[in-house]
Image (cartoon, rainbow, N blue to C red; front, side, top):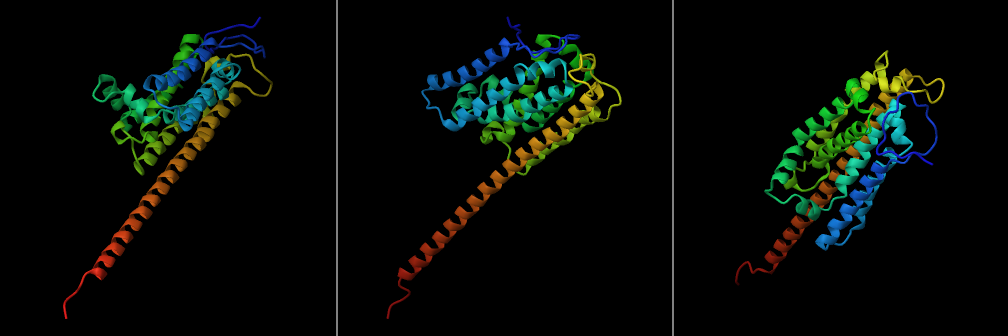
Length: 295
């Protein structure tokens, strides 16, 4: 009979086994996210667009993969490398997909203009505030006292994951949403906005990579999974994952958004030139038909 738990958490001293342990809370959350999204379409009588559905489902799938067993359990209490990998997926994969998976009409219905929740969300997603919130959560949730205090409890581990996802959603909102009234930002400010976080992300990554001693008791005291990969090596690998893998994904997103913006601007410029040429030809044609004098 398989063990059942609510959420992945550290189990100090328990030797790792490859026995499947389902986490009920992960599947409840996934079902709630998908169900709420579909129900919103039905209540509004809106057709489901494949592009938005695909993004939303991929975002939910990313959450499930890194929260369920075995990745969730390994990251919560055995390997710091896997723990940082989970943060990378939450932040740079799941969150942007979920933000991009919300149709504009759904945002308008969920956040009616002028309501308290709309003003609160607008404040949080204003880019200077979003940048501050994201980095404050990133730094705080990677402090050793916080990790060692929360990861040993299912509720604490769940709270950490919720903070990661919420901060990432707030952070990605102004960078991905296209509605100017909803706090969207455009190039080149958007590139600076994302670049600033890639620089600040180096701070915890540097501590993980270059610290001569284990920083997290949760991972230091965990029974080793295999020989030759001690807590120091694990911690250094975690720092590399955070800085290199996270940075690579972030810079890939920055490049994609910038190229999309450049393509849109090129299309706008081409359309503007064609319109000017059309007006010029129309003006010349009109002048050619207008008599210049009488004999």
